[in-house]
Length: 287
Length: 268
Image: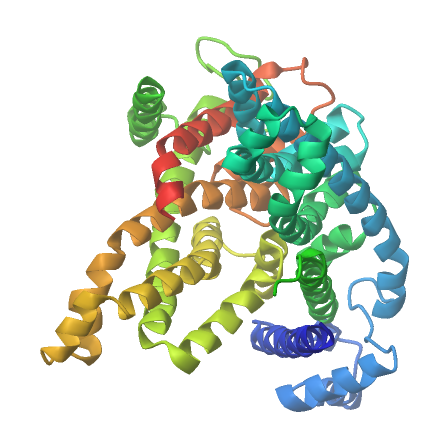
Protein backbone atom coordinates (compact mmCIF):
# COMPACT_ATOMS: atom_id res chain seq x y z
CA UNK A 1 0.00 0.00 0.00
CA UNK A 2 2.75 2.45 0.98
CA UNK A 3 4.64 1.59 -2.20
CA UNK A 4 1.52 2.33 -4.22
CA UNK A 5 1.04 5.69 -2.51
CA UNK A 6 4.71 6.55 -3.09
CA UNK A 7 4.37 5.65 -6.78
CA UNK A 8 1.29 7.86 -7.03
CA UNK A 9 3.07 10.79 -5.39
CA UNK A 10 6.06 10.38 -7.73
CA UNK A 11 3.86 10.22 -10.82
CA UNK A 12 1.81 13.24 -9.68
CA UNK A 13 5.00 15.24 -9.08
CA UNK A 14 6.38 14.24 -12.50
CA UNK A 15 3.13 15.07 -14.33
CA UNK A 16 2.74 18.42 -12.55
CA UNK A 17 6.36 19.36 -13.32
CA UNK A 18 6.01 18.37 -16.98
CA UNK A 19 2.61 20.09 -17.20
CA UNK A 20 4.07 23.27 -15.72
CA UNK A 21 7.01 23.15 -18.13
CA UNK A 22 4.69 22.60 -21.09
CA UNK A 23 2.42 25.47 -20.12
CA UNK A 24 5.43 27.73 -19.48
CA UNK A 25 6.78 26.78 -22.92
CA UNK A 26 3.41 27.53 -24.54
CA UNK A 27 3.29 30.85 -22.72
CA UNK A 28 6.81 31.66 -23.90
CA UNK A 29 5.80 30.83 -27.49
CA UNK A 30 2.55 32.83 -27.35
CA UNK A 31 2.41 35.74 -29.80
CA UNK A 32 3.10 39.02 -28.08
CA UNK A 33 4.92 37.49 -25.10
CA UNK A 34 8.10 39.53 -25.77
CA UNK A 35 6.33 42.85 -26.05
CA UNK A 36 5.42 45.10 -23.17
CA UNK A 37 2.85 47.77 -24.00
CA UNK A 38 4.56 50.14 -21.55
CA UNK A 39 7.35 50.37 -24.13
CA UNK A 40 4.92 52.27 -26.38
CA UNK A 41 4.66 55.07 -23.83
CA UNK A 42 6.21 58.11 -25.63
CA UNK A 43 7.19 59.70 -22.33
CA UNK A 44 9.76 56.95 -21.63
CA UNK A 45 13.36 57.59 -22.68
CA UNK A 46 15.66 54.97 -24.20
CA UNK A 47 17.11 54.09 -20.82
CA UNK A 48 13.69 53.31 -19.33
CA UNK A 49 12.74 51.19 -22.33
CA UNK A 50 16.04 49.34 -21.97
CA UNK A 51 15.28 48.75 -18.26
CA UNK A 52 11.85 47.37 -19.17
CA UNK A 53 13.44 44.97 -21.65
CA UNK A 54 16.01 43.91 -19.06
CA UNK A 55 13.12 43.15 -16.70
CA UNK A 56 11.88 40.50 -19.14
CA UNK A 57 15.34 39.26 -20.20
CA UNK A 58 15.24 36.37 -17.73
CA UNK A 59 12.04 35.10 -19.31
CA UNK A 60 13.62 34.52 -22.73
CA UNK A 61 15.33 31.27 -21.78
CA UNK A 62 12.50 28.88 -21.04
CA UNK A 63 14.49 26.55 -18.76
CA UNK A 64 15.93 29.47 -16.79
CA UNK A 65 12.44 30.97 -16.54
CA UNK A 66 10.91 27.69 -15.37
CA UNK A 67 13.65 26.89 -12.85
CA UNK A 68 13.34 30.44 -11.43
CA UNK A 69 9.59 29.92 -11.25
CA UNK A 70 10.02 26.59 -9.41
CA UNK A 71 12.53 28.11 -6.98
CA UNK A 72 10.05 30.88 -6.23
CA UNK A 73 7.17 28.41 -5.92
CA UNK A 74 9.07 26.49 -3.25
CA UNK A 75 9.16 29.67 -1.19
CA UNK A 76 5.53 30.51 -1.91
CA UNK A 77 6.46 33.17 -4.49
CA UNK A 78 4.34 32.57 -7.57
CA UNK A 79 4.96 35.89 -9.29
CA UNK A 80 2.68 38.85 -9.87
CA UNK A 81 -0.45 38.90 -11.99
CA UNK A 82 -0.02 41.30 -14.95
CA UNK A 83 -3.69 42.18 -15.20
CA UNK A 84 -4.62 42.42 -11.53
CA UNK A 85 -1.27 43.70 -10.24
CA UNK A 86 -1.39 41.45 -7.19
CA UNK A 87 0.77 38.53 -6.04
CA UNK A 88 -0.56 35.31 -7.57
CA UNK A 89 -0.25 33.47 -4.25
CA UNK A 90 -2.55 36.00 -2.59
CA UNK A 91 -5.06 35.79 -5.44
CA UNK A 92 -5.11 31.99 -5.25
CA UNK A 93 -5.41 32.06 -1.46
CA UNK A 94 -8.37 34.45 -1.60
CA UNK A 95 -10.22 32.71 -4.40
CA UNK A 96 -9.62 29.05 -3.70
CA UNK A 97 -12.12 28.78 -0.79
CA UNK A 98 -14.95 30.13 -3.00
CA UNK A 99 -14.32 27.46 -5.63
CA UNK A 100 -14.01 24.72 -3.02
CA UNK A 101 -17.36 25.75 -1.53
CA UNK A 102 -19.27 26.24 -4.82
CA UNK A 103 -17.83 23.20 -6.61
CA UNK A 104 -18.01 21.08 -3.45
CA UNK A 105 -21.69 21.79 -2.74
CA UNK A 106 -22.54 21.40 -6.45
CA UNK A 107 -20.71 18.09 -6.62
CA UNK A 108 -22.41 16.83 -3.48
CA UNK A 109 -25.88 17.80 -4.74
CA UNK A 110 -25.17 16.30 -8.17
CA UNK A 111 -24.00 13.04 -6.60
CA UNK A 112 -26.96 12.78 -4.22
CA UNK A 113 -29.53 13.44 -6.98
CA UNK A 114 -27.86 11.12 -9.50
CA UNK A 115 -27.21 8.27 -7.06
CA UNK A 116 -30.78 8.45 -5.67
CA UNK A 117 -32.32 8.47 -9.13
CA UNK A 118 -30.10 5.60 -10.29
CA UNK A 119 -30.72 3.56 -7.15
CA UNK A 120 -34.51 4.02 -7.26
CA UNK A 121 -34.40 3.09 -10.95
CA UNK A 122 -32.63 -0.18 -10.16
CA UNK A 123 -35.11 -1.07 -7.41
CA UNK A 124 -38.22 0.08 -9.23
CA UNK A 125 -37.86 -1.53 -12.64
CA UNK A 126 -40.38 0.53 -14.62
CA UNK A 127 -39.74 1.39 -18.28
CA UNK A 128 -41.32 4.81 -17.86
CA UNK A 129 -38.99 5.64 -14.98
CA UNK A 130 -35.98 4.66 -17.11
CA UNK A 131 -37.24 6.79 -19.97
CA UNK A 132 -37.74 9.71 -17.56
CA UNK A 133 -34.22 9.32 -16.11
CA UNK A 134 -32.66 8.96 -19.56
CA UNK A 135 -34.54 11.97 -20.94
CA UNK A 136 -33.70 14.14 -17.93
CA UNK A 137 -29.99 13.34 -18.00
CA UNK A 138 -29.94 13.54 -21.81
CA UNK A 139 -31.50 17.01 -21.72
CA UNK A 140 -28.91 18.29 -19.25
CA UNK A 141 -26.11 16.73 -21.31
CA UNK A 142 -27.25 18.77 -24.30
CA UNK A 143 -27.21 22.13 -22.54
CA UNK A 144 -23.85 23.92 -22.52
CA UNK A 145 -22.45 24.51 -19.02
CA UNK A 146 -22.35 28.25 -19.71
CA UNK A 147 -26.07 28.28 -20.52
CA UNK A 148 -26.86 26.48 -17.26
CA UNK A 149 -24.82 29.14 -15.49
CA UNK A 150 -26.78 31.88 -17.28
CA UNK A 151 -30.03 30.13 -16.35
CA UNK A 152 -29.01 30.19 -12.69
CA UNK A 153 -28.40 33.94 -13.00
CA UNK A 154 -31.76 34.55 -14.71
CA UNK A 155 -33.63 32.38 -12.19
CA UNK A 156 -31.68 33.89 -9.30
CA UNK A 157 -30.52 30.42 -8.22
CA UNK A 158 -27.22 29.79 -6.43
CA UNK A 159 -24.20 28.93 -8.61
CA UNK A 160 -23.67 25.54 -7.02
CA UNK A 161 -27.03 24.41 -8.43
CA UNK A 162 -25.68 25.01 -11.94
CA UNK A 163 -22.62 22.86 -11.12
CA UNK A 164 -24.94 20.16 -9.72
CA UNK A 165 -26.92 20.12 -12.98
CA UNK A 166 -23.71 20.02 -15.03
CA UNK A 167 -22.26 16.98 -13.22
CA UNK A 168 -25.59 15.22 -12.60
CA UNK A 169 -26.17 13.64 -16.05
CA UNK A 170 -22.69 12.15 -16.27
CA UNK A 171 -22.86 10.67 -12.76
CA UNK A 172 -26.42 9.43 -13.29
CA UNK A 173 -25.73 7.64 -16.59
CA UNK A 174 -22.59 5.94 -15.35
CA UNK A 175 -23.97 4.93 -11.94
CA UNK A 176 -27.26 3.72 -13.46
CA UNK A 177 -25.39 1.39 -15.85
CA UNK A 178 -23.06 0.24 -13.11
CA UNK A 179 -25.82 -0.43 -10.54
CA UNK A 180 -27.98 -2.03 -13.25
CA UNK A 181 -25.20 -4.49 -14.09
CA UNK A 182 -24.54 -5.25 -10.43
CA UNK A 183 -28.23 -5.83 -9.64
CA UNK A 184 -28.51 -8.20 -12.61
CA UNK A 185 -25.86 -10.59 -11.18
CA UNK A 186 -27.17 -14.07 -10.29
CA UNK A 187 -26.17 -13.93 -6.62
CA UNK A 188 -28.28 -10.77 -6.12
CA UNK A 189 -31.30 -12.55 -7.62
CA UNK A 190 -30.61 -15.49 -5.31
CA UNK A 191 -30.36 -13.16 -2.29
CA UNK A 192 -33.68 -11.55 -3.22
CA UNK A 193 -35.30 -14.96 -3.65
CA UNK A 194 -34.18 -15.83 -0.13
CA UNK A 195 -35.90 -12.73 1.19
CA UNK A 196 -32.83 -10.60 1.98
CA UNK A 197 -33.83 -6.96 2.47
CA UNK A 198 -33.05 -4.37 -0.21
CA UNK A 199 -30.87 -2.28 2.08
CA UNK A 200 -28.82 -5.32 3.03
CA UNK A 201 -28.50 -6.29 -0.64
CA UNK A 202 -27.29 -2.79 -1.46
CA UNK A 203 -24.76 -2.57 1.35
CA UNK A 204 -23.49 -6.16 1.43
CA UNK A 205 -23.76 -7.26 -2.20
CA UNK A 206 -24.09 -4.37 -4.64
CA UNK A 207 -21.78 -1.71 -3.22
CA UNK A 208 -18.75 -4.02 -2.85
CA UNK A 209 -19.02 -4.70 -6.60
CA UNK A 210 -19.95 -1.24 -7.87
CA UNK A 211 -18.08 0.69 -5.14
CA UNK A 212 -14.58 0.80 -6.67
CA UNK A 213 -15.86 2.13 -9.99
CA UNK A 214 -18.07 4.67 -8.23
CA UNK A 215 -15.04 5.89 -6.25
CA UNK A 216 -13.09 6.21 -9.52
CA UNK A 217 -16.01 8.19 -10.94
CA UNK A 218 -15.92 10.44 -7.87
CA UNK A 219 -12.29 11.30 -8.69
CA UNK A 220 -13.19 12.16 -12.27
CA UNK A 221 -16.14 14.32 -11.24
CA UNK A 222 -13.79 16.61 -9.29
CA UNK A 223 -12.23 17.51 -12.63
CA UNK A 224 -15.70 17.99 -14.15
CA UNK A 225 -16.74 20.31 -11.33
CA UNK A 226 -13.53 22.34 -11.62
CA UNK A 227 -14.12 22.73 -15.37
CA UNK A 228 -17.73 23.73 -14.74
CA UNK A 229 -16.64 26.33 -12.22
CA UNK A 230 -15.19 28.48 -15.04
CA UNK A 231 -18.50 29.41 -16.71
CA UNK A 232 -20.47 29.27 -13.45
CA UNK A 233 -18.18 31.59 -11.50
CA UNK A 234 -17.60 33.90 -14.46
CA UNK A 235 -21.26 34.37 -15.33
CA UNK A 236 -22.64 34.27 -11.78
CA UNK A 237 -20.06 36.75 -10.54
CA UNK A 238 -18.50 34.41 -7.96
CA UNK A 239 -14.90 35.39 -7.17
CA UNK A 240 -13.31 31.94 -7.38
CA UNK A 241 -10.55 30.19 -9.31
CA UNK A 242 -12.82 29.69 -12.34
CA UNK A 243 -13.52 33.41 -12.61
CA UNK A 244 -9.81 34.11 -12.14
CA UNK A 245 -8.97 31.73 -15.02
CA UNK A 246 -11.52 33.44 -17.23
CA UNK A 247 -10.21 36.91 -16.35
CA UNK A 248 -6.64 35.72 -16.96
CA UNK A 249 -7.66 34.32 -20.35
CA UNK A 250 -9.46 37.50 -21.44
CA UNK A 251 -6.58 39.75 -20.38
CA UNK A 252 -3.93 37.24 -21.55
CA UNK A 253 -2.38 37.25 -18.09
CA UNK A 254 0.00 34.44 -18.96
CA UNK A 255 1.94 34.08 -15.66
CA UNK A 256 -1.35 33.72 -13.82
CA UNK A 257 -2.50 31.11 -16.33
CA UNK A 258 0.68 29.04 -15.80
CA UNK A 259 0.06 29.00 -12.05
CA UNK A 260 -3.60 28.12 -12.49
CA UNK A 261 -2.69 25.30 -14.90
CA UNK A 262 -0.26 23.83 -12.38
CA UNK A 263 -2.74 24.17 -9.53
CA UNK A 264 -5.69 22.66 -11.40
CA UNK A 265 -3.54 19.80 -12.74
CA UNK A 266 -2.35 19.10 -9.21
CA UNK A 267 -5.87 19.08 -7.74
CA UNK A 268 -7.22 16.84 -10.52
CA UNK A 269 -4.35 14.38 -10.22
CA UNK A 270 -4.67 14.33 -6.43
CA UNK A 271 -8.40 13.61 -6.71
CA UNK A 272 -7.84 10.76 -9.17
CA UNK A 273 -4.97 9.32 -7.17
CA UNK A 274 -6.94 9.65 -3.93
CA UNK A 275 -9.75 7.69 -5.58
CA UNK A 276 -7.25 5.06 -6.72
CA UNK A 277 -5.80 4.66 -3.23
CA UNK A 278 -9.30 4.44 -1.73
CA UNK A 279 -10.18 1.69 -4.21
CA UNK A 280 -7.09 -0.20 -3.07
CA UNK A 281 -8.04 0.23 0.57
CA UNK A 282 -11.64 -0.87 0.11
CA UNK A 283 -10.87 -3.83 -2.17
CA UNK A 284 -11.12 -7.13 -0.24
CA UNK A 285 -7.78 -8.88 0.20
CA UNK A 286 -7.33 -12.06 -1.78
CA UNK A 287 -5.36 -15.18 -0.90
CA UNK B 1 -36.22 3.15 -30.61
CA UNK B 2 -35.64 2.68 -34.32
CA UNK B 3 -38.36 5.24 -35.06
CA UNK B 4 -36.69 7.70 -32.68
CA UNK B 5 -33.38 7.18 -34.48
CA UNK B 6 -34.99 7.77 -37.87
CA UNK B 7 -36.62 10.94 -36.54
CA UNK B 8 -33.26 12.08 -35.14
CA UNK B 9 -31.60 11.46 -38.51
CA UNK B 10 -34.34 13.43 -40.30
CA UNK B 11 -33.91 16.33 -37.84
CA UNK B 12 -30.12 16.50 -38.27
CA UNK B 13 -30.38 16.30 -42.07
CA UNK B 14 -33.16 18.91 -42.15
CA UNK B 15 -31.24 21.35 -39.93
CA UNK B 16 -28.09 20.87 -42.04
CA UNK B 17 -30.07 21.40 -45.25
CA UNK B 18 -31.76 24.53 -43.90
CA UNK B 19 -28.45 25.99 -42.80
CA UNK B 20 -26.92 25.28 -46.21
CA UNK B 21 -29.84 27.12 -47.82
CA UNK B 22 -29.23 30.19 -45.65
CA UNK B 23 -28.26 32.29 -48.69
CA UNK B 24 -31.72 31.75 -50.21
CA UNK B 25 -33.78 31.69 -47.00
CA UNK B 26 -32.17 34.82 -45.59
CA UNK B 27 -30.79 36.79 -48.53
CA UNK B 28 -30.16 39.81 -46.31
CA UNK B 29 -27.24 38.03 -44.66
CA UNK B 30 -26.21 37.76 -41.04
CA UNK B 31 -24.57 41.18 -40.69
CA UNK B 32 -27.12 43.47 -42.36
CA UNK B 33 -28.49 45.97 -39.86
CA UNK B 34 -32.10 47.10 -39.94
CA UNK B 35 -31.44 50.29 -38.03
CA UNK B 36 -35.09 51.29 -37.94
CA UNK B 37 -35.96 48.12 -36.02
CA UNK B 38 -33.39 47.19 -33.33
CA UNK B 39 -34.65 44.64 -30.81
CA UNK B 40 -37.86 44.10 -32.81
CA UNK B 41 -40.22 41.20 -31.95
CA UNK B 42 -40.96 38.45 -34.53
CA UNK B 43 -42.80 39.68 -37.62
CA UNK B 44 -43.31 38.64 -41.23
CA UNK B 45 -40.08 40.43 -42.23
CA UNK B 46 -38.05 39.09 -39.31
CA UNK B 47 -39.28 35.64 -38.27
CA UNK B 48 -37.32 35.66 -35.00
CA UNK B 49 -37.14 39.38 -34.58
CA UNK B 50 -33.93 41.41 -34.60
CA UNK B 51 -31.09 41.67 -32.12
CA UNK B 52 -29.98 44.78 -30.22
CA UNK B 53 -28.20 46.22 -33.26
CA UNK B 54 -31.04 45.40 -35.67
CA UNK B 55 -29.66 42.26 -37.32
CA UNK B 56 -32.19 39.64 -38.42
CA UNK B 57 -32.07 36.89 -35.81
CA UNK B 58 -33.44 34.20 -38.17
CA UNK B 59 -30.61 34.85 -40.65
CA UNK B 60 -28.06 34.73 -37.84
CA UNK B 61 -29.45 31.43 -36.56
CA UNK B 62 -29.23 29.89 -40.05
CA UNK B 63 -25.69 31.12 -40.70
CA UNK B 64 -24.58 30.28 -37.15
CA UNK B 65 -25.94 26.77 -37.50
CA UNK B 66 -24.02 26.40 -40.74
CA UNK B 67 -20.74 27.44 -39.10
CA UNK B 68 -21.20 25.20 -36.04
CA UNK B 69 -22.49 22.18 -37.94
CA UNK B 70 -19.85 22.32 -40.68
CA UNK B 71 -16.80 23.13 -38.60
CA UNK B 72 -17.45 20.80 -35.66
CA UNK B 73 -17.10 17.73 -37.94
CA UNK B 74 -13.96 19.29 -39.47
CA UNK B 75 -12.48 19.68 -35.98
CA UNK B 76 -13.56 16.12 -35.17
CA UNK B 77 -11.72 14.92 -38.27
CA UNK B 78 -8.52 16.66 -37.16
CA UNK B 79 -8.74 15.26 -33.62
CA UNK B 80 -9.52 11.73 -34.84
CA UNK B 81 -6.60 11.85 -37.28
CA UNK B 82 -4.29 12.99 -34.47
CA UNK B 83 -5.67 10.30 -32.17
CA UNK B 84 -5.08 7.66 -34.85
CA UNK B 85 -1.53 8.88 -35.29
CA UNK B 86 -0.62 9.12 -31.61
CA UNK B 87 -2.79 6.39 -30.08
CA UNK B 88 -2.77 3.99 -33.02
CA UNK B 89 0.99 4.16 -33.53
CA UNK B 90 1.77 3.96 -29.81
CA UNK B 91 -0.51 0.96 -29.40
CA UNK B 92 0.98 -0.72 -32.44
CA UNK B 93 4.57 -0.08 -31.37
CA UNK B 94 3.85 -1.00 -27.73
CA UNK B 95 6.50 -0.99 -24.98
CA UNK B 96 8.04 2.34 -24.08
CA UNK B 97 6.16 4.15 -26.87
CA UNK B 98 2.84 3.07 -25.41
CA UNK B 99 3.91 4.16 -21.91
CA UNK B 100 5.09 7.57 -23.14
CA UNK B 101 1.92 8.11 -25.18
CA UNK B 102 -0.27 7.13 -22.22
CA UNK B 103 1.62 9.47 -19.89
CA UNK B 104 1.19 12.27 -22.43
CA UNK B 105 -2.54 11.59 -22.84
CA UNK B 106 -2.89 11.39 -19.04
CA UNK B 107 -1.28 14.80 -18.80
CA UNK B 108 -3.74 16.19 -21.34
CA UNK B 109 -6.68 14.55 -19.63
CA UNK B 110 -5.61 15.73 -16.17
CA UNK B 111 -6.70 19.27 -17.05
CA UNK B 112 -10.44 19.95 -17.18
CA UNK B 113 -11.43 20.27 -20.86
CA UNK B 114 -12.85 23.79 -20.63
CA UNK B 115 -9.87 24.99 -18.61
CA UNK B 116 -7.46 23.61 -21.24
CA UNK B 117 -9.49 25.28 -24.00
CA UNK B 118 -9.54 28.74 -22.47
CA UNK B 119 -5.86 28.52 -21.48
CA UNK B 120 -4.74 27.67 -25.00
CA UNK B 121 -7.19 30.17 -26.52
CA UNK B 122 -5.68 32.86 -24.30
CA UNK B 123 -2.21 32.08 -25.63
CA UNK B 124 -3.35 33.08 -29.11
CA UNK B 125 -4.25 36.62 -30.11
CA UNK B 126 -7.78 37.60 -29.06
CA UNK B 127 -8.22 40.62 -31.33
CA UNK B 128 -8.33 38.82 -34.67
CA UNK B 129 -10.61 38.99 -37.68
CA UNK B 130 -13.91 37.06 -37.41
CA UNK B 131 -12.77 34.49 -39.98
CA UNK B 132 -9.50 33.90 -38.09
CA UNK B 133 -11.44 33.55 -34.84
CA UNK B 134 -13.57 30.79 -36.41
CA UNK B 135 -10.47 28.96 -37.63
CA UNK B 136 -8.65 29.40 -34.32
CA UNK B 137 -11.64 28.20 -32.29
CA UNK B 138 -12.27 25.03 -34.26
CA UNK B 139 -8.58 24.31 -34.84
CA UNK B 140 -8.00 24.46 -31.07
CA UNK B 141 -10.89 22.05 -30.56
CA UNK B 142 -9.43 19.70 -33.16
CA UNK B 143 -5.86 19.92 -31.90
CA UNK B 144 -6.72 19.52 -28.21
CA UNK B 145 -9.56 17.02 -28.41
CA UNK B 146 -7.49 14.00 -29.42
CA UNK B 147 -6.39 12.72 -26.01
CA UNK B 148 -9.45 10.71 -24.95
CA UNK B 149 -9.75 9.14 -28.41
CA UNK B 150 -6.02 8.38 -28.48
CA UNK B 151 -6.33 6.48 -25.21
CA UNK B 152 -9.09 4.27 -26.61
CA UNK B 153 -7.23 3.78 -29.89
CA UNK B 154 -3.95 2.89 -28.21
CA UNK B 155 -5.70 0.10 -26.30
CA UNK B 156 -7.42 -1.18 -29.44
CA UNK B 157 -4.20 -1.03 -31.50
CA UNK B 158 -2.28 -2.80 -28.75
CA UNK B 159 -4.84 -5.60 -28.72
CA UNK B 160 -4.60 -5.89 -32.52
CA UNK B 161 -0.81 -5.95 -32.31
CA UNK B 162 -0.95 -9.23 -30.44
CA UNK B 163 -3.70 -10.76 -32.57
CA UNK B 164 -3.25 -13.87 -34.69
CA UNK B 165 -3.64 -12.21 -38.07
CA UNK B 166 -0.97 -9.62 -37.32
CA UNK B 167 1.33 -12.39 -36.13
CA UNK B 168 0.70 -14.24 -39.37
CA UNK B 169 1.26 -11.10 -41.44
CA UNK B 170 4.53 -10.54 -39.56
CA UNK B 171 5.54 -14.15 -40.21
CA UNK B 172 4.80 -13.61 -43.89
CA UNK B 173 7.30 -10.77 -44.02
CA UNK B 174 5.10 -7.71 -43.50
CA UNK B 175 6.59 -5.22 -41.09
CA UNK B 176 6.94 -1.54 -40.23
CA UNK B 177 4.63 0.99 -41.88
CA UNK B 178 3.15 -1.63 -44.25
CA UNK B 179 1.99 -3.79 -41.36
CA UNK B 180 0.48 -0.77 -39.61
CA UNK B 181 -1.18 0.80 -42.65
CA UNK B 182 -2.48 -2.35 -44.33
CA UNK B 183 -3.24 -4.68 -41.43
CA UNK B 184 -3.72 -2.65 -38.25
CA UNK B 185 -5.22 0.68 -39.32
CA UNK B 186 -8.12 -0.74 -41.38
CA UNK B 187 -9.12 -2.83 -38.36
CA UNK B 188 -9.23 0.30 -36.23
CA UNK B 189 -11.86 1.82 -38.54
CA UNK B 190 -14.92 1.06 -36.35
CA UNK B 191 -13.26 2.69 -33.33
CA UNK B 192 -12.06 5.65 -35.42
CA UNK B 193 -15.52 6.06 -36.88
CA UNK B 194 -17.10 5.96 -33.41
CA UNK B 195 -14.58 8.46 -32.00
CA UNK B 196 -15.20 10.82 -34.92
CA UNK B 197 -18.98 10.85 -34.41
CA UNK B 198 -18.74 11.12 -30.62
CA UNK B 199 -16.42 14.14 -30.92
CA UNK B 200 -18.91 16.19 -32.97
CA UNK B 201 -21.46 16.97 -30.20
CA UNK B 202 -18.60 17.48 -27.72
CA UNK B 203 -17.07 20.11 -30.01
CA UNK B 204 -20.42 21.78 -30.66
CA UNK B 205 -20.96 22.12 -26.90
CA UNK B 206 -17.39 23.33 -26.35
CA UNK B 207 -17.74 25.99 -29.03
CA UNK B 208 -21.00 27.09 -27.42
CA UNK B 209 -19.29 27.38 -24.03
CA UNK B 210 -16.37 29.35 -25.47
CA UNK B 211 -18.80 31.61 -27.33
CA UNK B 212 -20.81 32.44 -24.23
CA UNK B 213 -17.58 33.22 -22.37
CA UNK B 214 -16.52 35.59 -25.16
CA UNK B 215 -13.59 33.45 -26.30
CA UNK B 216 -15.19 31.88 -29.36
CA UNK B 217 -16.19 33.13 -32.79
CA UNK B 218 -15.86 36.92 -33.06
CA UNK B 219 -18.64 39.30 -34.14
CA UNK B 220 -20.23 39.82 -36.58
CA UNK B 221 -19.88 36.15 -37.61
CA UNK B 222 -22.57 34.11 -35.88
CA UNK B 223 -22.17 30.67 -34.35
CA UNK B 224 -24.25 28.83 -31.79
CA UNK B 225 -21.88 30.07 -29.09
CA UNK B 226 -22.13 33.73 -30.05
CA UNK B 227 -25.92 33.43 -30.50
CA UNK B 228 -26.27 31.98 -27.00
CA UNK B 229 -24.31 34.92 -25.65
CA UNK B 230 -27.43 37.00 -26.28
CA UNK B 231 -29.07 35.19 -23.35
CA UNK B 232 -26.73 37.08 -21.02
CA UNK B 233 -28.94 40.15 -21.18
CA UNK B 234 -32.18 38.32 -20.40
CA UNK B 235 -33.95 39.09 -17.15
CA UNK B 236 -36.56 36.34 -17.40
CA UNK B 237 -37.28 33.39 -19.68
CA UNK B 238 -40.82 34.71 -20.29
CA UNK B 239 -39.49 37.98 -21.66
CA UNK B 240 -38.80 37.64 -25.41
CA UNK B 241 -38.96 33.83 -25.55
CA UNK B 242 -37.95 33.84 -29.23
CA UNK B 243 -34.42 34.60 -28.07
CA UNK B 244 -34.33 31.03 -26.78
CA UNK B 245 -34.67 29.59 -30.32
CA UNK B 246 -30.88 29.04 -30.82
CA UNK B 247 -30.75 27.19 -27.48
CA UNK B 248 -33.78 25.09 -28.44
CA UNK B 249 -32.21 24.27 -31.79
CA UNK B 250 -28.93 23.32 -30.13
CA UNK B 251 -30.72 21.02 -27.67
CA UNK B 252 -32.78 19.39 -30.44
CA UNK B 253 -29.72 18.78 -32.64
CA UNK B 254 -27.59 17.46 -29.78
CA UNK B 255 -30.41 15.18 -28.58
CA UNK B 256 -30.69 13.85 -32.13
CA UNK B 257 -26.94 13.22 -32.13
CA UNK B 258 -27.29 11.38 -28.81
CA UNK B 259 -29.95 9.10 -30.24
CA UNK B 260 -27.95 8.50 -33.39
CA UNK B 261 -24.70 7.81 -31.55
CA UNK B 262 -25.88 5.21 -29.05
CA UNK B 263 -24.28 2.40 -31.07
CA UNK B 264 -21.06 4.38 -31.57
CA UNK B 265 -20.78 4.97 -27.82
CA UNK B 266 -20.86 1.21 -27.26
CA UNK B 267 -18.18 0.68 -29.94
CA UNK B 268 -16.01 3.40 -28.42
